[in-house]
Amino acid sequence: MIKEKNIAVLVSGGGTNLQALIDAVNDGRIKNGRISLVLSSNPDAYALTRARKNNIPVLVVPRSDYDCRASFTEAIVNALSEYNTDLIVLAGFMYILDSSFVKKYENRIMNVHPALIPSFCGEGMYGLRPHKAALERGVKITGATVHFVNEVADGGRIILQKAVAVEEGDTPETLQKRVMEQAEWEILPEAVNLFCCDKL
Ligand code: GAR
Image 1 (tube, rainbow, N blue to C red):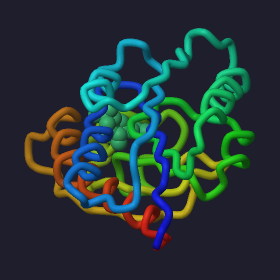
Image 2: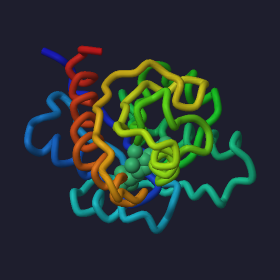
Image 3: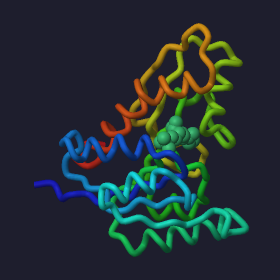
């Protein structure tokens, strides 16, 4: 019998990836896992509404309250230490945390990135920017990656990837939407399920 895992999801914005995780827990695609906390860096994130609608406890640690990466990281580590967290999922979390966070939760932090790593990734590549860069470079295939988080931005072990076609006339927004629908919302719950079933 596998122990049920406590999952903390870190968000900054709309929370569609959070929603994909909530749906997958509810319909049994994620087994042995429950979302026990949603932590947002942004007090106005719609992701918080999604969590509250599903009776998931929320915490807000506003990035603007901290003057540097180290103090922001410390506040997040302190907040998480109250919860018995097995897995931390960065689902549209727009900040890089420092190495104290990575050391404390080694091999227990996952991130979803909206490109096929090692393309269009690293510091500064978040949100719409990887899609803009993919269109500027003229690639015909992009996609999404779920990976473990280590000290290197987008540099940890790759867990799952899925390719998505770029279409004629795509804008960063249309490409982002297709990558989310066809890749992110599929591979993120799948990777979380693998973790919760001790298969990673
Ligand atoms: C998603 O496309 C996610 O992959 C990306 O931000 C979006 C958040 O959307 N994350 C990054 O760029 C992190 N490097 P969501 O809030 O609707 O899940």
